Image (cartoon, rainbow, N blue to C red; front, side, top):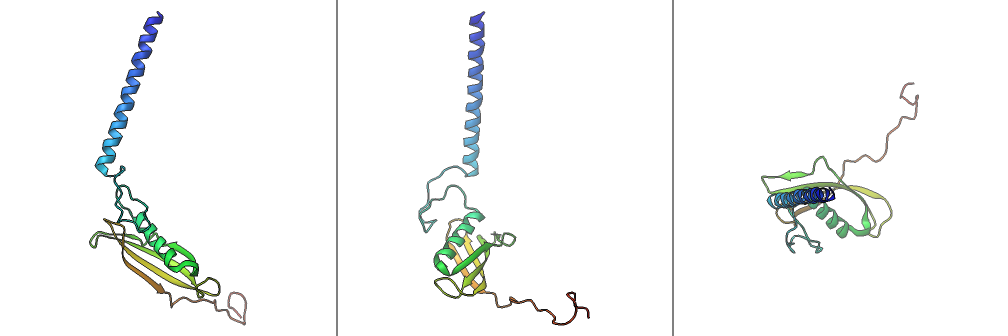
Length: 157
């Protein structure tokens, strides 16, 4: 009786091992077909030497734009945020378009009054290099709220 129990446990282990093997092979084939698995890094894709594996994405383009902006502006950069609603892939141009907003101190070493800027980056979708970089000051921003001196808080007299 004990011999039959050992044989059934042995068969169960073989079946489970076979299923795990099939799952691992199927996952590896799926990753290879989707080009998401590990690949050799292309040293030209990153300026800071960090390797890329698989396909480049909009997030990779965002990171490249953010790194370039932070490195070039240094201590003058107060805040930097990504416009996730406008950033996108432009298939016609073959570029990822990344839009950001930044506040920069007037002093290059930081401190003082800060101004609002727009950052526009275009990155090639096949290799991560910036094809276009723009830093544009927002001249239309209203800095102070205008309030009436007379009347109630709702503007009635």
